[in-house]
Amino acid sequence: MKKISIIGAGSTIFSQKIINDVLLYEELQDSCITLMDINTQKLENTNRLLSRLVHDNHLPAVISKTTSIDKAIEGSDFIVIMIDTPGTGVLKHDNLIPKKYGIDQVVGDTLGPGGVFKALRLIPQVIAICKKAEQLCPEALIINYVNPMAMITWAINEATKMKAVGICHGVKGTVRRLADFLEIPQPEIDYWIAGINHMAWVLRFEHQGRDLYPEIWKKLGRPAPRGTEKPLVKEMYDEKYRIEMMKATGYFMTETSGHLSEYLPYFRKRNDLIKKYDGYRGWDGTSMYYYRTIGKKRIKHDVNVNKMSQSKNPVCFSEKSVEYAPDIIHAVVSNKIFRFNGNVRNTGLITNLQQQACVEVPCFVDRLGVHPCYVGDLPPQCAALNRTNINVQELAVKGILSGNKELIYQAVMMDPLTAAVLSPEEIRKMVAEMFKAEKVWIEIPAK
Image (cartoon, rainbow, N blue to C red; front, top):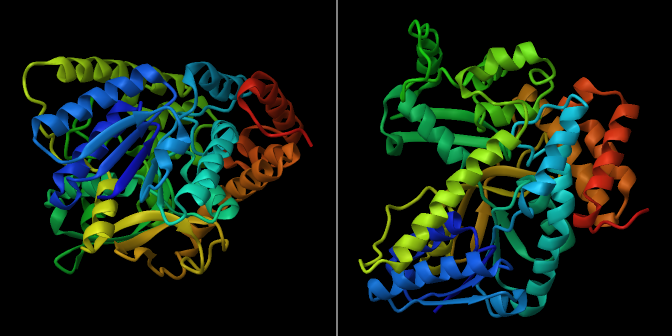
């Protein structure tokens, strides 16, 4: 019996998907699954539903809940971390303060002022979990879902001895998007994708040995139907940012268009450019639009979870989701090799990116753990764009781990979008205002 700990299990959407998929594997149906969260109401909702799933399907798995990190991870084989920032109050500061200074973020959780300050709040918490794991389960595999993915996974690798991999479904989503666009079944696609999280590059995209890039270019040349308000399912009219960057670099990128536009200096610095490329999506200029939308979906999901857990009808399995964590766990336990794109330390894997940075590369996993693949050089233009983001990540991680606030300011100063809009003096003023507004959530000592 393997022990799987879910830290941040009050996120019912993620927890339900991951545990559902874990229990779909026969080899994992006797797992001991511990749910941990500090929000007791959300924790109870998740526990009730998943306990019903186990009971109603007559499985030997054991589901337990706790608000204690120590109890959750003691003796664990796998620790899935998916904690999040506390509520929308702090998110307003992440996004509305930069917006006041002209920094127009969409989500604000990966790079830029919002991403750096989210890292400030979450890296100390994640490192504390991993330090406890060093004592209570040193052989466990840390599976990190927390954004900003690259910064947090980098910090785990830098500050702890735990084996860790960061996972994101952006690669899988991109492959599905392009496969649908070309009307080719996704399982028939062969691909090789590498770079950094939220800015990896589709280096090869093939079908039965045939390079599909010429077909992508040809199909993108078709004009959109007159009067189109929303994109057709199999078209790409809502991917203007990604298409523009493919025209500029020659390669498709692995982040949805609006999100991607935050990591670049080219678009969100002017309202006319935002209007031109955002298209039908209707972003309102701050990530609060995104979080309001997600918040409504989460509330609706929580209501559905409560109904399911209290229903007299049996709780049935859902279809397998796109999440990698269950497949990774299954591969380690069963020794059946699984391939995925993971976020790992750059130990010479991508040779023209900074060593020790967090890179997203193809990985294989088996009983011996996660095995990242060697990629070599990225195309120089792709590596150059990745480096602009890695510069921010490196300074932020060093600043947080050392408690040096000056490095935090310098990390934001290196952000491509921020640098395209503000002077160093204006950036310093904005960062100081964010520190003051968010001081109750930030553990970094003043230096």
